[in-house]
Structures are given as structure tokens and as C-alpha cells.
Amino acid sequence: MPERRFRRMQYAFNSLLGEILLWILTLLMFLWAISVVMTYQVADSIANMPYDEQLANEVRGLSGLVSVRNGQVVVNFPSPAREILRADSKDRVYFQILGPDGNLLAGDKDLPMVDAPFRPDGTTVLFRDDEIVDDEVRVAYSFLPLIPDQAPVLVQVAETHQKRLGLASRIVSGVIVPQFVIVPIAVLLVYLGLSRGITPLQRLQQELHDRLPSDLEPISVQGIPFEIRPILEALNDVMARLAENLKVQRRFTADAAHQLKTPLTGLRTQTELALRENSPEAMRRGLEHVAVSAENLSRLTQQLLSLARAEAVGGGQDDFGQVDMNDLVRTVAKEWADRALERRIDLGFESEGGPLWVRGSPFMLHEMLTNLIDNAIKYTAPGGMVTVRVISDIGSCRIEFEDSGIGIPVEERQHVFERFYRVLGTETDGSGLGLAIVKEVCEFHRGSITISSPEKGEGTLVRLNIPSAATV
Ligand code: ADP
Image (cartoon, rainbow, N blue to C red; front, top):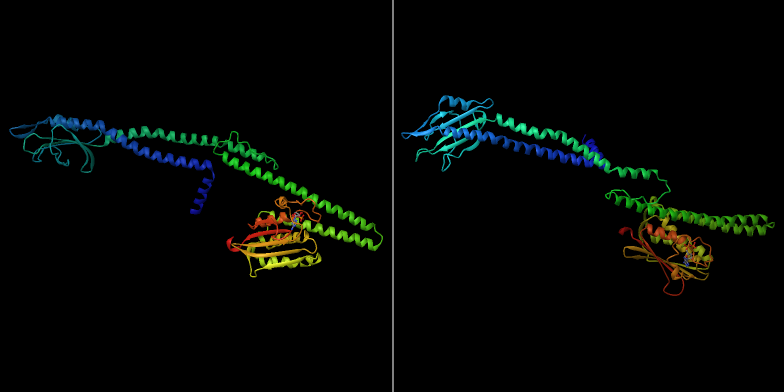
């Protein structure tokens, strides 16, 4: 049951209109309750005023009947006057005149006594609420100092609250009843106002709904309430970035298609040429060309896949885990030892020993290292040197690929990470994707990469820094 209530509340708060209405209604109800209490209090005091005045007059009238004769307090109260005093169609009326000794001179004995003020003046009429038997009454009373050195005479007139309650409830209902009409009208107006207020949102929804999936043009903020503008501007910002991303993706697809087309055309031509040969020897040479082209094509496809994988959001997360970079770099170096030997390149591996843990995808990291060692060997002439180092840095793992090859001109160093970018005049086979993959994988692992020149001699020094597993 509580769960259901919670869900219902959540539902209400998911609607902006619902939430605002709920708040306004709560506030209205709260104000209404306060206004009822206040109206009642005000009505009560208003209703008391004329009837108190009437009671006071009766006390003054009674006081006029009390006099002193021969040192004795006497009351001259003819019975018609008594009847007039008691004659009231709605309330019970009580009166009392008490002598200086507290003796009842006239009226009802049940009226409670009160203490006299310090200096009674005989004219002031006081009021209080009291009880007679079980009746709640309003009492007007006055003290008459008739005989010096003796207690004053007390004159009291009391009446029940019927007339007052009747007047007060007439005042209250006169104020409250119209509110039964006003409050629902106010709620309705608020609802209509809010509904009108969210019309631009509905228009916006329709506009977004009608859009073509390819339309990433910014949405116009014209006529949109200023409260909603920041959301729209943020949305436009996202769309602009999405459009830019889409443009890059389209260019990449076009470039990739072009890159695949060229070796495929070459492969087809080489195959046709080989097929036209008659001697097995010439055919074999032709087929060797085919094999090299097929190998290049396969490498290019592999690189395109790697790039797509590294780029995909969360790509490679499935094999994410602790990776010992020392072990991985050594494995990659071993894998390329034969190739280095083939090219008469002295491939060295330097490490401090012990494991160097990073958090990442072994597959992607392997691909990154492969591209870097491939470049180092590829762009170094036979007889040259390639050294791979794994160094433990503060909070990270540093990997260096140093070669004595042709080097990368300083002005080209920022461009070589772009997709399909190759330094002009590079004769070696390649696609221009290797370093783009390296950068993507490196950034994915929150690492950094720099290209510089070795301290001694010509060549290239590529330095990678990947945060250690403990700091990620
Ligand atoms: P690819 O090697 O397939 O052309 P890369 O993205 O790996 O593509 O490299 C981009 C360019 O950077 C290469 O074409 C090459 O000119 C240059 N380059 C990369 N690594 C080296 C290196 N170790 N030595 C010299 N030039 C390099």
C-alpha cells in the first residue's frame, strides 16, 4: 500500500502541471483554513459588540435602582421592570445585586462572584465569560462604592450566547459560502492559465515529432517562454555537436570506402594479370603481388574495425579488466621480433621487471601497441634500431617506442593522429589509420600520447602514459 502511494506521488511529480497544481491547491487549502479560523474570530468579536453594549446598558439601568437609605443599601426594583429585563426570546438572562456584605439584594444567587477592583468608580462596566450551572454566559458587571469604608455593591447582568452565536455564524457563512465558489473558480483559472502556459511545449513537441531524422538544424527559440529556453539551447547545442559528429562519420565512411576501393581494384588487376600469364613462374610472381595486396587489405580492414570498436561508446568494455602492461608490451615485442629480423632491424625491449597494472581492454591495448611497433619498424630503414621501453611512472605506466627511422617533421606531429593522414612523400604502404587508432585507444584509457625526437640522432620517440590501475 505505501509503495502504491509512493508511485502515485511520483507520477504526480512527473507532470509539471500536476506538481504546480498540487502546490497551488495545498497553498489555497492552507490559506482557506486560516481564513476560516480568522473569520470566525473576527465574527465572534463583531457579534459581541452590540450585545455587550446592550448588557452594559442593563447594568447601568440596574445600578440606577440601587440607593442608600439610613445607612442601608436598598434596591427599588418594581416587578414589571424585572420582567422586562428577563424578557428575551433567545437567551436566558440572569441578574444579581449583591450588598456590601455579599448579601443578595436582588436577582439570582447562582451568578459567580468576582473580586472588586482596587478603586471602583461606580460607572465602569466590565465584561467576562463565565458559567452559571451548565450555561456558558457573557457577564457585564459593575461595582458601586455607595457607602464609604464599606465594600462596593456588585451589579451583574448575564446572558447566554445564543444571539451572539447566531450573529457570528451569519457573518461567517456570509464570508465563507462565497469562497466555495471562488476557490474552485481560482483552481480552474490556474489550470487554464498553466495549460495555456505549456502550449509552446506542445508546439515544440509537434515540431520535433515532425522533423526528418536527418534534420539537425537548430530549433527556433522564437515564442518559447524564457524558462524553457535554456533547455532548448542545450538541445540545440547537442544537435549541433551531433551534426558535426555525423559530418565526421560521413567523411570517414567516404574515406574508408575510397581506401578499400583502391587496393581492391589493385587486387583485381593483379589477379587478372596473373591469370593471363602462361608460365608458372610468371603466374607465381603475379600471385605473390596478390598475396601482398590481400595482406594489406586485410590489415586495413582490421584497422577500420579496431577504430570502429575503439570509438563505439563503451566499446571494448566487455573485456575490460586488469592488464599487466609489462607483460603485454613484451608479448607484442616478441610478436614483431621476426618482422624486425626480416628487415634487419635491431629490436630491443627494456623493462624494470615486475608487473605494471592498468585497467583496460587487453584487445584494444594490444591493437594500440601493435600499431606503434608496426610504425617504428616500418619507418626505419634496414640496419636501424627500434627500442620499446616500459617504465613505472608516478601513478601511471609509461611506454616508449624509439626508432632511428625517418622521423616525423615537427609541423606534422599534430596531424599524424588524424584519420587517413599520411605525411606527404611517405612511400611505405599504409592507410593513415594507425595513429588515429592509437589516439582513440589511449584517450579511452584516459592516457596521453606525445611524439618527439630521440635524445640522440634521428628518428621518432612516441611516449604513452596510461594511468595505473590503482589511480583509475
Ligand atoms: P600509416 O602508418 O598507416 O600511414 P599512421 O596513422 O600509423 O598511418 O601514421 C601516420 C603517418 O605518420 C604515417 O604515414 C607516417 O608518415 C608518419 N609516422 C607514423 N609513425 C612514424 C614513425 N615511427 N616514424 C616516421 N613516421 C611515422
